[in-house]
Length: 59
Length: 554
Image (cartoon, rainbow over all chains, first blue to last red; front, side):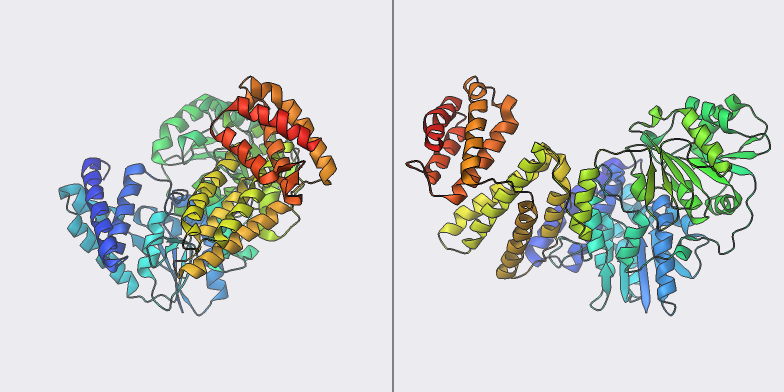
């Protein structure tokens, strides 16, 4: 997966836009939940986030 | 009952979750216990009996995106994985991973009847921290903060279990230990690595002729191990780096007399096999939180790892092998549930730790130790008081807008206070975390809970309020004003920052006790001073102090 950061970044941008639109129109629905989860999975890959302490900026 | 434990961090965190998982099994003998870990770290559950393991396949889910930029297929794969797990209909979900990603997984798997602890999401998608232990970790647990509770105990609390010594044992039977010392030269992060040349010196001085010493680690640490082995050049030092899988290492560790290394997964394994650990630690890890728990373990600490002398390691290793008292400064662990005992080792954050203890365990609040402590608490008190005043008129149709702006300013200022005095950081972190835990709901409920929190902040900070009788406080204010004046007139207010802050606090305190100072209204006088400060008009500030305030207070 490490060799595809550009594809991950592009997907992340699309997911963020989609999630935002869905949350604005339908609230935090099942679809929005999946999008947000996928978003976070990509962010972890891109930042090699420390999975313990990365919780700081999430609200 | 069906329980799911999520541990989506790494090897070391999974091993440190064993006690909580074993306690869940012990306390719920009829329950099915399931554990979800990342696919690449699943090996860390081998040997943990009586649990059903599920793996979180990050690579598989993200593969369509990495290959074709296809997030639709990734979403389908993700939804399928979630549905398979959700079908198991868990009654209780315990999330032991403190990460955003895990909070979304937990939320996706929880059902109406599920009892959830650990990070999850509110109905509006914001972070939800339902239990106090997870909230504690969120507020105080990161490296660089002041936590001294062990992560195994925090995990136990998140799981709702009182841990027992038996929960820390990977094997029921403890065999006689061979004269073997296992050393892990590597670490989970480069900043936690002890220099190779210092390892060589330490091992050379510590290795006994009739002992077997093993170097262990992952394949990518082979180069480091080859160098150290070649330079130590002793036949009884075996290099097994890259040759053992973690479950094999666990069995070997159970027979070893001592493990030496930094904060890494092998050290967590040693804790589970009751093998005494000699850990070398620095500020890049928090040994209080993630250090070894096996009885007799010792931690040698320095701010920088490279400042730990090889002789400290070799002498301490020999002392441990011979069953002797600590040879030098260290933290010693007497048992899995006993806290570390310090031997000639001191830390400069005792005040902050005692503040943490007071906030969370109702011990006595520590005495303020310096002027900066008094000032910081005074500022918190004032901000809490101002916030409560604004919250009282928040619902007012005309005043509400202004109070919202003031409250926004208070939020900003709250963040600044720990920057000025990091020692009081635990209180602000507690407050911010508790505020974050307020669930979405009716405006009145949110308002009431916010008021309660600011009230609590005011109560705690009021413990540190310092106020003499008005005459004495007035004299102190005059003295402070005179000390500050020359610097203010020369635009060097930063050089008298502490005195100036004390002066402002004293003036605010005085204004509580009377509406007038001399012939002047306190509110006008403080308003004028604030206005001049806001304009950075230092001449005006100095003039007000010298020609209005001092004469009025005299």
